[in-house]
Amino acid sequence: MPQQSRAWRSAWSLPPDVTFLNHGSFGLVPYDVQAARQEWQRRLYENPMNFFVREMEVALVQAAERLGKFVGAAARDLAFVDNATVAMNIVAQSVDLEAGDEVLLTDHEYGAVRRIWQKRCDRVGAKLVICNLPQPLESATAIAEQLLSAVTTHTKLLVFSQISSPTAVILPAAEICRRAREAGIPVCVDGPHAIGVVPLNLEELGCDFYCASCHKWLCAPDGSGFLYVSRKRQTQLNPLIVSWGGSIAGRPATWQDEYNWQGTRDPAAYLAIPAAIDFFERIGWETFRTRTHELAKFARESIIPLTGIEALVPDSPDWYGPMVSLPLPTHGLSAPAQGQRDPLQDWLWSTYRIECPITWWHGQRLLRVSCHLYNDAEDIERLVKALDRVGLRD
Ligand SMILES: Cc1ncc(COP(=O)(O)O)c(C=O)c1O
Image (cartoon, rainbow, N blue to C red; front, side, top):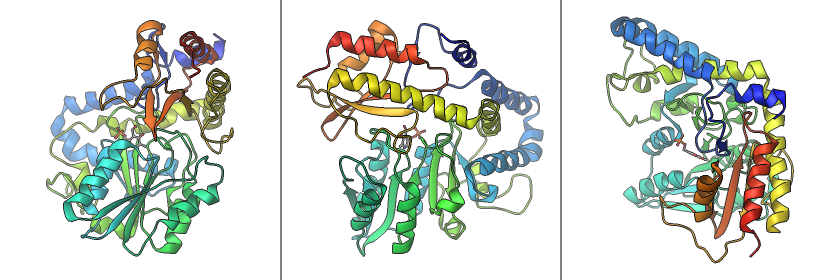
């Protein structure tokens, strides 16, 4: 393993015999970021009274300012929530929907997000509309046009992933938001895979809501998500948890107070987000993005010859970042039931200690390879060797 890769890998507590190619599902937290969280917990447990009523709100504003600089938003437009799922549920509870209204999603959305909106629509007799994006995905304009062509006079909200989960595709967020604005349709962007992976400026993006988890590519601790809400939407929000709804320290109330205080709980994961940003700034964002995309590209170039099946998107960092989804032959299999895994995924783990998920999407069996700085070319070669052993042609 080259010296630089070894140095990067040593920043995480990944066991040497594990090949972890699933950062897209669950991010590993570097030692430095773990330490930052523990330091906040130490301060909390030293004197909880002092921490909660005097220190916490100041610290949350500072963390939001740091995060805001990084994602291009003012701190006053960001609320910390546990994860993107919570953020999306808040949006779902906050959008006015009546019978006959429509919520528009793409066919690349994360299953739980689709379920959130299905349940929300079912409750009032609204309709969930799924727009199938063009296949193959080759043109940002064609994607935006297809999606916007599914807008009707009943559409109340458009929801799409900036980077999709099953297909790992970077969708043209700026173009979609711009066209939705022109059409007068509010937009909620599902962004957990975008944080750190693509440069962000939420104000310029001009979406109404942005849901994110910092525990993925940004490597912040679990429980460190956020919800961005544009100013005009902030008064329409409905929190999932109702508590005091005002400042615990006695300053004038803000909309974020509903989320800052949801009963007594440990906010250390939010407060460790700046340490995660520091971690990447020491390495350099370009280094992270270039290095991990090159590894994903290497995976793509090595696996396609084994399967003989083309990738879903052109070979360009405009279309995929550190994560790539590659179709596998189905071998007569069909999608496993929820909570069950593809036998090949389990075999990779039990035989080779390789974590690499296989999911099903539109009848396609997709191997999703995620590459972070603790990975190197040897990890990809190990995966390719294992796949070659099972034989990947139908
Ligand atoms: C596109 C997308 N949206 C939402 C989520 C939910 O993220 P979390 O589990 O952090 O709430 C995921 C998780 O993988 C995802 O990939």
